[in-house]
Length: 346
Ligand code: SF4
Image 1 (tube, rainbow, N blue to C red):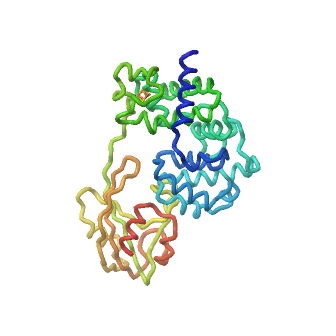
Image 2 (cartoon, protein in one colour):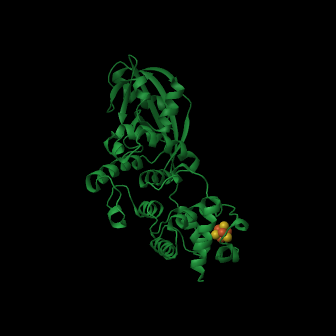
Image 3 (cartoon, rainbow, N blue to C red):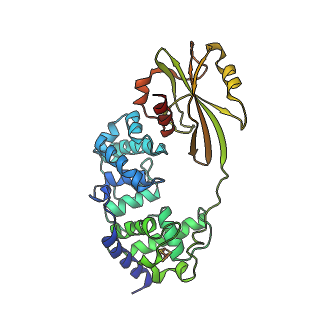
């Protein structure tokens, strides 16, 4: 038996024995599998579970998701981050309804035309829902493959991408049960071959692993060069008039795109906020009410220090937006950061 075939068989058997019971593993229906795979990108399993269950309750079928408003989808998504994922799910559902009568195509080429479905998600749908020999590569798979095959170049390069997709393709082509093999690869990465302290003595692939035999498990994978972190100070303004607050919807170019937000002003590192505020809000003669707790928040490679200020104003402020009752704002899709601020205000 060639070693690739043995790797595939061992991992498949290990997955059948050791897999975690997760709500999206209960059926082979591509719709919940698609939702879970999109939610799991950049988000931990434990965080995803309640979101997945609520989302499926709100939009139990692809048709329901396609017919839902963007706002109602974002409301379900609020707090999960990377909101374009939620918007793309809805657009993807509409595309599938329009072009495939709501049925998932069984070809990679066709799936890649669906908004928001990239090579990883296409591989996940084809292998997990349809048990087809289609590869998938995510961060967990990259880590396992780089250690298993001793790949010593940085992640994120074209060479690295080719290497991982080639290996994933070669391996899955040996699989009798691609559904279990691909999930096994991801499961091994998230539970055994973890980023720090991989549990090699428990690993079904230990005897094949080059990183293990060369004592390189802590050196591999070689991380990609990170963008340097930028620090940003931000004022978030809760501008109130007659029980209403001034709110705006973020454009597609901004952080938290599509979500409802409070107006913001960026400050330089040691800048006092009061003069800035007076200059900006002078015509509306603000009455300062309260400075709320400062919030630390991370968005992509930016670390934010957010200073929420509650003010009463008499005129429309010089920001785009509209007045909205406080109660209604709480029901709108907003970021976790805004939710935290509003919770303290209430
Ligand atoms: Fe990862 Fe260790 Fe298994 Fe190698 S032996 S694949 S490093 S857990």
